[in-house]
Image (cartoon, rainbow, N blue to C red; front, side):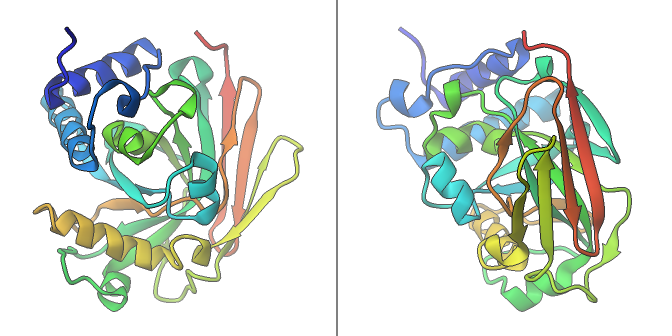
Amino acid sequence: MISNTHEDVARRLRLAEDDVTAIAPLTETIPGFTADDAYAVQLELVRAWVAEGRVVVGHKIGLTSRAMREQMGVDEPDYGHLFADMVAAGHTIYSVGSFINPRVEPEIGIILGSTLEGPGVTYQTARAAIESVVASLEVVDSRISDWRIKLEDTVGDNGSAARVVLGRNRFPAESLDLESLSVRMQKNEEEPLVGVGRDVLGSPVEALAWLANTLGARGVHLKAGSLIIPGAMTASVAVSAGDRVTATFDELGTVSVDFIGERR
């Protein structure tokens, strides 16, 4: 019989990532698997990775836009942990063989200048804690087969986190209207996807407050210097070898990523 303790489920997800091989949805194979179970599995993943020497540098928020929730078939946001080895700056090249089923989405990266500790974080306190923002592309990848995910599946899978590509320049947040800031993301020569900051839970700042309060209820706070990617401004695009994805942001510049090689 397969053990479904939180530790064992985390171990299966780590093996899936290491082997670049998807597993069946947790919600289909584990009876009664809840969101609390999923976050407990995520914490087991984080503990194991930290024990291996990986360093947490921030958090990602997922499923904050209506487009992404509809695309993924879930109805509320989630979060995951970001590690230093996930993050690159400037134009970046990845091998598709490092991923199972990668997708790319544009985000307004946030750098915190002060600590945020919920519950009780408001829009105003979250806004005041933002030091700078940066153009970002997130590469998401699901260790769950064919992206057949419910909320509990992606939460247990560390929010489907994989990589983050940041622009080379950071911009002071106080002079920017983050709700109106727009992005144009294009894969190769395909029709571009367009979004604005308010597509992210009404505002990237509201998404940040949601994260601080959600983590605060679990006894965790967001540290000064943390990188927060608050959610996709558009739907994501699937990528394969030979693809280039470029996101051009009003006032934040451009960030791009290329994919080479073959899938395993």
